[in-house]
Structure formats: structure tokens, C-alpha cells
Length: 177
Image 1 (cartoon, rainbow, N blue to C red):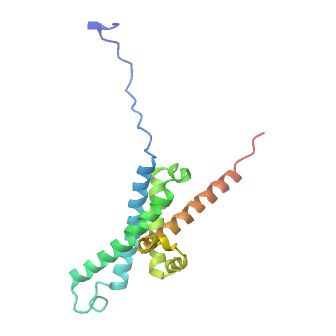
Image 2 (image 1 turned 90 degrees about the horizontal axis):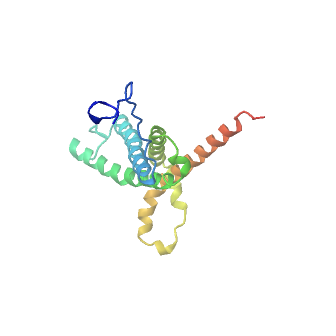
């Protein structure tokens, strides 16, 4: 009621808009971790596909054209990358230490995890996870669970690494008197 026409007087200067804090809910971190783990996996897979030369005539399937080889490569990618990325995301996203990271760091760690998972599968290191016994109750679902294990293992390593970094930062904090 202080201005002309019954309007409140306007504040001097530009209006400051504060951006909302990033969404760090489990679901948003899960989706971000899944997507970037799949992207990291895809990048390593694409480099391998290009460098190794599956697309070349001698490196592809016999009597298969470029489209057939690309379809096979896409199938193998989907069968290996999607479960591994999901395993990574399911293991890392519930932990507060992972959710407290900035969205950029979550994306970077997830992409690195996806790349590490791809390298573990390509080199055969992930095959060691097949020695982990699964209960007989699991039955046929055990085969599907085994596709998640490489991503789960890399996720556990990422969480241990994040914890180690946090402990090292706390250890370097100056002592207060």
C-alpha cells in the first residue's frame, strides 16, 4: 500500500535468482549412474570395435556385411553393457557418500566405472566372478544375476575408493586448537 496505485514499492537493484540444489535422491542418482556407466562402457566398446576392426572384412562374421556386423555388435553391447551399468548403479546409488557427490562427479565416476567394467569383461578378468557360488534357490535367475556381477564388483571398488579418498582428506585436515 506504499506506492502509487496501492502497489508495494519495488526493491532497488536486479532480482537475484538462486538455482535450486541438485536432486540427490536415490532415483535421480541411480538414473545418472546408469546412463553414464553405459556411456563409459560404450566409449571403450566403440574404441575397441574401431581399433580391433570388427567392421573390417576379415574381422567380421563370414559372409556378413557391415549391417550384420553392426547388428551383432549392438546385440553384444546391449547384452553386456546394460546389465553391467545397472549393477553399478544399483550398488552405488543407495550410499550417501555417492549421493553427496556433485552431479558432475557422479557422472565422471560412473563413466569411469562403465569403462572399467568393459575392460574387465573384454580382458576376461570379469570371468573370475563366475567362481562366486550362487544359492541353488536362485535357479535360472542366477544366469541373469551373473550378468550384473561385473558392474556390481566395479561399483563396490568405486565405493571403497571414494571412502579411501574421504579418509585421506580427513587425515590431511589441519588440527584446530
